[in-house]
Amino acid sequence: MIRTSRRLADGREIIYFDADGSVPEHGAHDVADTRDLPPVSTRSQLRWDALLGEWVVVAAHRQTRTFLPPADQCPLDPSRPGRPTEVPDGDYQVVVFENRFPSLATAVDTDVPPTAPGSPLAELRPGLGRTEVVLFTSDHDQHFAGLGRDRARLVVDVWADRTAALGAIHGVEQVFCFENSGEEIGVTLSHPHGQIYAYPFLTPRVERLLASVRRQREATGGDLFAEVVEAERSGPRVVAANDSWVAFVPAAARWPYEVQLFPTRRVPDLPALDDAERDDLAAIYLDVLGRFAHRFDTPMPYIAAWNQAPVRTGREDWWLHLQLFSLRRAPGKLKYLAGSESGMGAFITDTNPEDVAEQLRAVEVP
Picture 1 (spheres, rainbow, N blue to C red):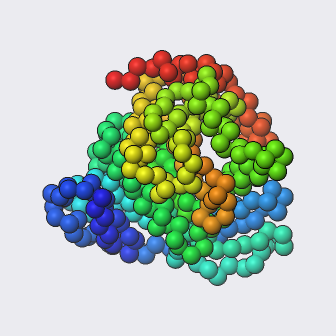
Picture 2: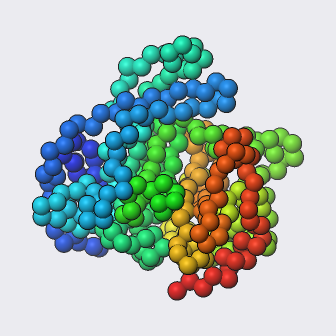
Picture 3: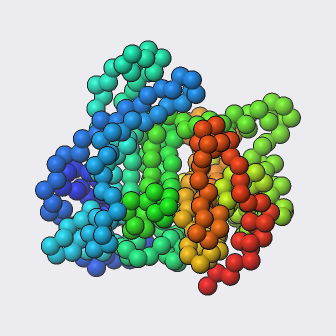
């Protein structure tokens, strides 16, 4: 993989990634960003919810971010004469750049009071971290399921590269790679892309998973992740599998359509995958995305969320996995997070996990 780092007009880093042996048509991505951009100003802060024991990121400056522009005005397309974009070059394979409207940043304003006004229990901290955008292709009308194995494998390598780089930033505790796909999910730019968040804390999901693993070990001496993977590999909810990976609908799936992808070898994160495991990941991920795309008459909106080990703590207990889920429950019908889910965090599912697995297995992917 060839990595080329450049700077945008406002000083943000942009990194071009090209497959080994490929030569960019326009040289070493040395096209300058000609836009007149103001400096990025990030005033994010963390606020501690003492009742729930969770950090909340307050990023009010993001209200002005770009929202559903016309396709011919997409800021993620390659630049063309008379219309510069976030990517100065006229073509690219995979690109990563710092978000122009970041929730977390290394250059965040550090001058914050110790607590929120009138609430001494609500500790405040600067919103230190980093948020990046990952462009999977220069083709505005493409989608991940249609990338092909070579490009999907390059994206896997990029995720691993950025996970290692962001995990090395002082103060970062967790790196989260994800993709939101579809307007129903809340996507504001339709160009195929994902994001990466480098958090300065452990997210609630990771905290809960680690607590469950430790509780199981203390109660039974067992390894919870290993037990789940072993049981699901031969169970009725398997959707697809290959030499290195298994994809299954979890027994207690929360979402109408939900699949988890686990490597069959325990690894903490994406950088720990070997070449064969990365090849197999690209293959099985495209397979499952294809099933999501063709289950109904139109592709399902989805979130793909990589659950990686924390940077410093709990790594020996972790097992890398991907959550892929959709809120579509039937053609033209969505699962809304209403009173029970949003108010109490108690999910009530509209589908049966075994039925969903059978339906996804039956999908014929072109």
